[in-house]
Image 1 (cartoon, rainbow, N blue to C red):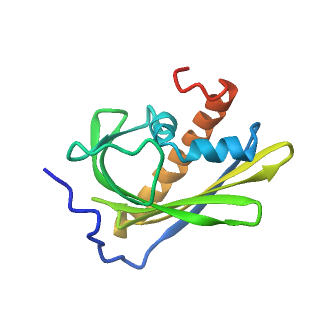
Image 2: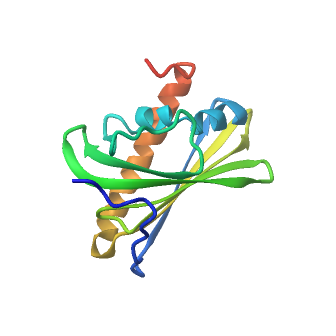
Length: 169
């Protein structure tokens, strides 16, 4: 089964939940934000909780560029969660804060709006995931999962930084 084309935008129900999860990273803003822009990071920080398989033999680009990318999501690598459209938007810097956005949606989720913000803080970086999810009656469940997922991602980030940005460790 092939997911719909990324350009197809679903109607958005009114119920949304907004989350903000932040961490301090022992790495400079430039290094963190450069890494944010690499699609390899998504695979690393989502594992093993979520695995992404791109659809239709499409691959994620080495570095994110504006556009839409389709993928199948697998919980723990084997439980299908349906398809998701990752829709990347570059955002202008906000003062010293660097930003990028995935304003996507999926099979179960009408809106998965994720903004990453990286700014200088205490000789390192303040890293913030801002997420808005809309999934109809499923919104509270999806939001609960998103909170756990983004805490997991930030722990994986900490591991990556502790391993000097070595994706193999």
